[in-house]
Length: 357
Image 1: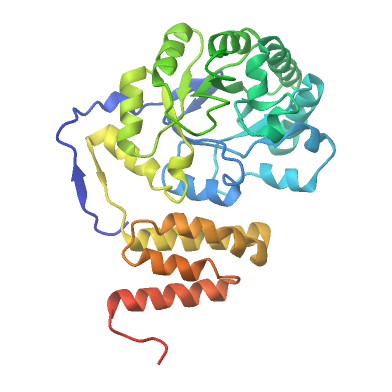
Image 2: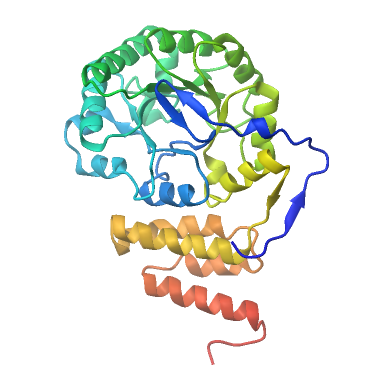
């Protein structure tokens, strides 16, 4: 990173213990700042970028157990480890215990992830209508059966890979089953829990109820580590979640989209009480690197279409960003991106230059 401004946060007392190693089963991680599984976003390219910027642990997009059992080529692409991911988790979803168990075993044998995570929190109707995702929050007995099947199958491989579970607070405000679901998951063998304390009905609206996270931490104290997710959009929000709930670590999702810098900034904040600002050059350079990684992974045409929305996220807050985004959403090739970004850089240095002359 080039010379950066440092934001002093005078109202916060530094607590270096907030950033710390964590242990999940037999897995020890160097820190407690994670990238969450983000459907349609946390592919290998984005995870690689997040590792570059300090993510201590990364999760794949959720993988359909039924699709994987059918040997879906598209599903296989979701799982491959990035070149710089020393440690990563594969998240799987489904409602059939046998399919889930078979998927976990095959993934461990082929890709050797450090962790298998079970999704019991996705609120999307196409997932819940199959009985998977947040639908498992309505049926703790089924969740127990799924976790137990996966845990037992993983143990039989002879490879010590922890099985973890991500949950929500419940199906709706009248069905807050987080406690029952968490207990079922741990009794079935889950080595850690992550909770996004919104209901399925809320999806991503309203606010996450961090009080529920704090209660879960207390219930599981001395049993398994609990990680928090939900409404983490800044380093300060991560600090506040750790302090107010006592959770052992945080998991960034939407807060990392277009902002992988949040991992390094959060670590700096937790360790020294201040964090470095990110320059426009950092943002553009990182976006360009992600574009090239994604081209290698998905091909130029697909990658260039996908990167339109990702460049839009990267360029928020940059002077002239709105005009830049208008052009980037039309980009269809690496050459298009290079031309648009070169012209943007020239305009930033020589604002009165007409590059069309």
